[in-house]
Image 1 (cartoon, rainbow over the protein chains, first blue to last red):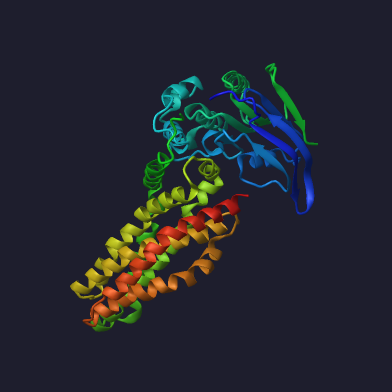
Image 2: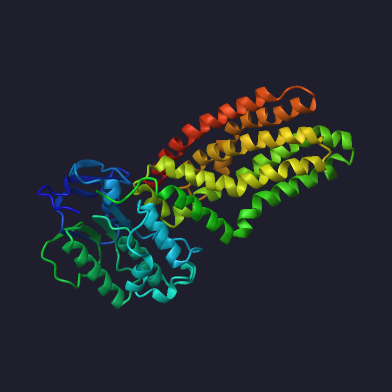
Length: 204
Length: 227
């Protein structure tokens, strides 16, 4: 990861329509390396839509996103949505190793150590179907550590997590920002940590 | 330099899908059991006359194989779509068509290969001569991968719909017709004592075409389904 002077992404007048009705409109922001954008808004205000747009799953209805030409979007973007992308029939460890390979890493951070770090050390051989919703979320969050990428797009990362889990996610995020990573995150609640380079976007 | 490789995901996907197939054994065996059931019903319907059975054995096995692949198609992307794995695929450094191809390869290994191996044996039970069974094996080996590849386009298009099942059949069956014609045609020719090379070569050409084009079409279809 390197620091650029140019913002990672510059969004200008982003707009998205559902059935010709504007979901959110005329959104402009810049995301820089080492900084974070917090997307707030009521249910249905388009938080997930904005994140999926940044991930490249959907195209903006109007406006444009200009990416830093040096930023390799498909190598360096991690997306964690409501559906976690982990398989119930695979163990926590198998899921994590697969997420690492899928992100292109033949070798990388030790997946067992990552699970231990997320307090799932005792569950590495339990299938994801046997884990609780919060533990499954932790496995998916482990994917962020097992396959390091510069931009994290996190859709409600605190959902289903207990207090310790929330604290852990906050720690992961501030470590990631310290390593000049970038985060775009949607949430209902307040953020427990104080971050210097934090922008708020309110969609409602 | 980034340590990431665009090709690391390919063997990982095949490994994962085979592992999943092993853990969902009941579901994975469905195509084979379906083939077994359909083929064993025909002697009851057609009567036990060995000449009659031998003459239609190849067609019976080919139609049953086609339907059993169709039955298993839905599984190709359904769970990956439902649990968000597909979104992770879309963000992988590996191009989506290549990922699709390795999904299809894994799917064929689980639901196509057993049909290829069991088909000729079942056909011989229906009084198909031994040397013709050999041609049947060839035609199935060339034909079933095309069924999986072409089917993946239909599944890619319908995976976003709640009730895509019957729609997949409607979309895909017309595209299966040439495969059935040349597959069963090869066996027909062999049992008439004629060379079956032309049919098999045409199947091979269809396979080559499908290998190149189907993953691209499927990847595009999946992106539409995802948005």
